[in-house]
Length: 567
Image 1 (cartoon, helix red, strand yellow):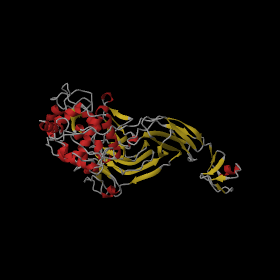
Image 2 (cartoon, one colour; image 1 turned 135 degrees about the vertical axis):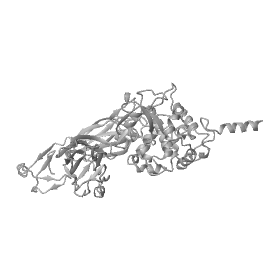
Image 3 (cartoon, helix red, strand yellow; image 1 turned 45 degrees about the vertical axis):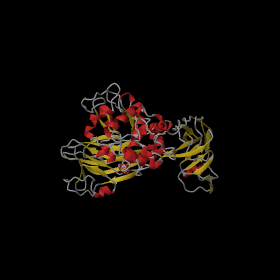
Image 4 (cartoon, helix red, strand yellow; image 1 turned 180 degrees about the vertical axis):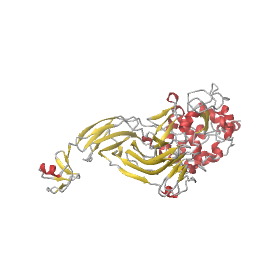
């Protein structure tokens, strides 16, 4: 009798969560990369529902308790199943199917395109606003959905990415993180190709195991930690299993991602004794306070204690007193665009392509470039240029095409070709000068026109500069609540600093920023005669070394705290 009862007990215990039975048994005892591959073998075989058929399954997978469609992008309108898709003219006008991992990133492979685990119903307008930009976090949204539910804007630079991102609501950040963990596991055999897409390359690498970029993985791990598995996700996972025949293990086993990419990669997975890793303790964000001990060549940065922080990092930003000079960074005359003008060349011919230009709807035409045709719009995109940290002046000469009333849109874009600013001009057989201010990122310039808005391009010149130079340095492993900077550059007197806490498991976000101005006492003497009139007896170089008392022929000298320095 005892033996029989023991058999029943063992059989009952050797079961996975949520009635999964022995579904995950073949992953038992695996760790790290081997665990990911074992899970791939389990969840990869599944039914292809067909992209066009997915909406037939949404009433099973994405239905709220009160009978509406579950939309993780917008709360503008409640959609009932059976309603037409509608349009995308505004938020709430319609809904469609959204690829959480954008379709363009994986080259539209049929099985991935139709995987309902990541293809979800969303508001059409909000979906279009996202486009194919990565998920992320922004402090300064350029656009927000109804009630600020979702946001679009520049990524918070403290994350380690500078492009445009789409930030979902906190309520669903964990959901999306676990979807991404599923995707790189279920498609382990093809994930290495996703990084070939210029936007996806900021999220994925070509390594099928270490498949996430550092900033993206850290963010997803934090999202999953802060937004634990919900009943909504459990119910959806069970429904997907009934429809598609596979499961998301990161929903079935909360914090399973830590076994693969996180802090417990050396721990063996047990499908029927799973207790999950110990929650990560993230330090609080420190609070930076005013600097003390300010002198002409240093100061002490100060901050308050942050809970759960064992050490601190200080980021020092040095702002130059001067500005960078304007310089010509690109000139293009189109003299080798020798086409007939009737044959389109999407890459502007080999001469332009070799210099890094790209585009579409372009017609090389007898040493000039024709933009657009009667049936096709055009775009001409410059090579990627280095950040001037200031302004970019765009000069270009154009010529009208017959009677076309042409509007030319000139855009400055970041490295991901996300438009950061744009200006419109009208073709008028003339030279135009456009200035884009505040360009503090690597950039491209694009010229765009619609179909039947044709014009000729003759010359382009880009001039960049004028920005304040900055230097950023980070000092790690500080155990005190202060750090003293010494030997700072005599030519600079404007600084700022911020702090973050760290422990063995995680780091906090960066703190507030504190500005510091050093008392340099700088006076500039601009001519040799003025210098001589000062009757100076000694001159030093900027390294503090004394030079000959007979002043060399120089145009400028600095007096800093009573000493004279050659600039």
